[in-house]
Image (cartoon, rainbow, N blue to C red):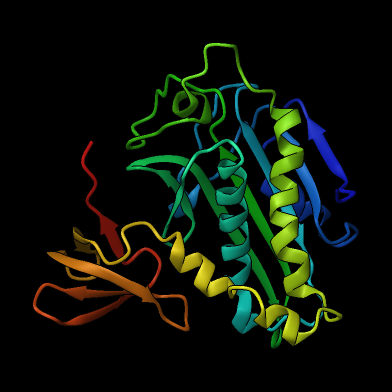
Length: 258
């Protein structure tokens, strides 16, 4: 098991904000976790709904050495795959909705907010904020299709302990992160395992399935197949007519039945 410094708070504005405040003196893979965030943040500037003490809300500070900025999407993949691996230990099959939301079926169980700081050609800091729904069964916000681990497990024996569940989740993320960023791990060893991109694609939500989307750059509604990820981390979709479209973050809306 990894030895991780976890800074727990009963209440804080945002674990991502705390990671930013401490980023200079904190070491690689330092973690901040909170029972409740008064200003928890999600993607697209949204707030993150989480009932007090019921879920896992935490941030990881990554400070990889000599990590090229062009590879920054790899850290997003690392965190998303780590969450998927953790959920599999509970026999929950999860998918990654590009770029890094975690879904069980058509329901969102986890949101991930990635914030990067680049220095020249290298990535100096990556902060990954993770909000994983553990025990919450009633959701008051208008967030579409939320679910939780408790709901998916159908547990009758009581709630999961967030502090207990954090350790195995961090281990799943660390098991992917450290081999990726460790210069002593040889290329032949890496070559003997599926690549990060291959693993990511194997868990990609709606891969090669026909679904409806909205192009937010034009307002056009269209149907198409997700075919993969471009080198610049954009999502590649083939429309019904065979046209290939590439979408950056915030340029595409998924249409999901509620």
